[in-house]
Image (cartoon, rainbow, N blue to C red; front, side, top):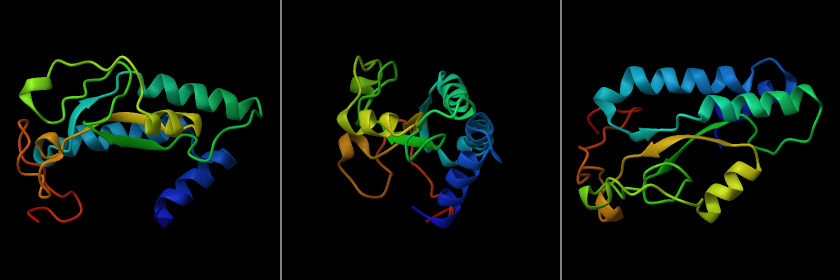
Length: 145
């Protein structure tokens, strides 16, 4: 993890930043930039409710995981209950996951919040992000590269 991510996690634990505010900021940034970047195929409509649950746990002094309140995007070739696992293909564009992949279970067990499904090369057959049925993905850190 990068320094900025670790600082966010520390701020959430210390109560200087709520999980809700962290997720809200992430969703706002996605909505503002994603028309150009196309990094997300679908957003999680329950992300803020999941963040509220983390904040309640913190307020009650309950144990939270190492990723508590962190907004996380998951590649669309992984299953996340209730979200579409499209593999960036029109073939699977309507497939809604009925279970969480093991890695998603682990993210959630540590308090991470899946904010949405990331775009990718169709069926993970590529490395540039250009072959998705939902459009090519741009690099938010280096647009055009």
